Length: 633
View (spheres, rainbow, N blue to C red):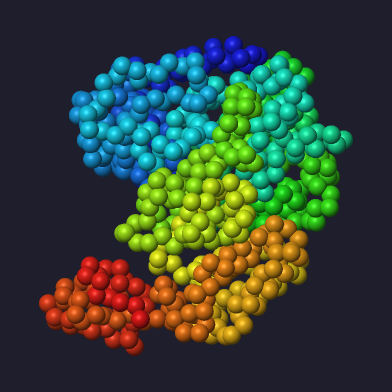
């Protein structure tokens, strides 16, 4: 069937709505994004498939990431008239018991993350709550009220974890492609641009440029217009775009289609990292499905509008996340940035007007067109509208993906959504914006998260990576780590970036090795300012951020490394050694048993000794001691 109208979408999706929300037989949704698979979801999926080879009595389904990666593998079990339950840590040894227990009405509360109160999407006001009247499970928390979820508002990730990403009909059942058909048949291209402008949507890839303005500028230039999706997500600790592509690829395709209508394009490209095989696989499936329904290709929905999408995989160069380098790579050239005195919206891919947005930006577009600019603009702050997806990683209890309204404070993200710092350790800093972002100290925890406010304290929004650090983090070593990454990923084309980052890294390495000297801090600041001002592209201009912000907010750590030859956090190995506090040592022998160098000796129930000439400073003794008897000097 070729889709011609919104009614056609509704007709096709009708059979899938009840199965999506409250099926007539047991449905088991297993989170099969990369995070879930890595935690054991694939093994659990195979186990239940073996137990129910013909799926008799159950409907087994894969979904994307629901965000709470710390609790993976996540398995949702549902049936009409019964609670909709999300189970946590359901590996292959638990999956059969969880399903059979649900069937029998026996719920293992230790395994349950929560029960759902309302599975509807923000976009589905006309769908009745299928859980209305269902008797809840006593003593089990409501999923939406759990701190990890209750501050979140999901727009870009509205379908992740709820639909099968390989089933386009389930996307239809969540209002998928309705906005595209409306934009194609009911709204003029200029009006589509106005909607995006009025919504206040800004690019989610890092720069934060107003999306509607970019579209309008691209549309007014003559030539073959191209729509390009930047899925080259290279920031350490960032996986927002990957999760959207793995869990809801059609939202990105639909966003690109709407952008194509707005600027008059017939060809689109998705530039994805080669390290994202599952995302690419699901994109390929999604494109084929959209083509089969006539939503991609020639004369879409019976109109004269035609649009095709091709996928190109990058070789993993971080710099290819920059727009001009990405387009050079698409053309088969070396991925190197160029000066932007001529913008890509005027002359980009193949010297033609090209509109580039990232995955999250395109995923927002269908929701905005469907619900309206005013609806979207009510969320967020004056200059940063809507929501933002962050990958919350590092020294934090609840690692995962979170989507919150712009303007939420860092404190709410780290301590409410993220659950705070493990092992009762103190919060030290949070880095936003990937390896080029700044490190924000505790004094700014109440800072509202938006483009302007992060910039004011020396950081950036970036694509949304958020790395939390605790008291055991050495800020000098952190700056050195990120500079090492950026030096490796620099294309080497311009002197300030190539030589400046290299020299800064050398100084940081000397400081961490105990060879820092008077004047190094000032030299780092001078070099950092030069690199930021004189580099060709965004990699170089933002590369000094980790160094400059750690000097600004943690200068005492730099001075301790240089003047006292000490690392306060006990991270830089040349500057510390481990000792055993004989008064605290109980002689449990645990540290001695785990030491790989046999450097710890002593009798049971008597204080032990650590031989410094054998110690390799691996920290295993420190981590294993339950009595705080291992100290860092």
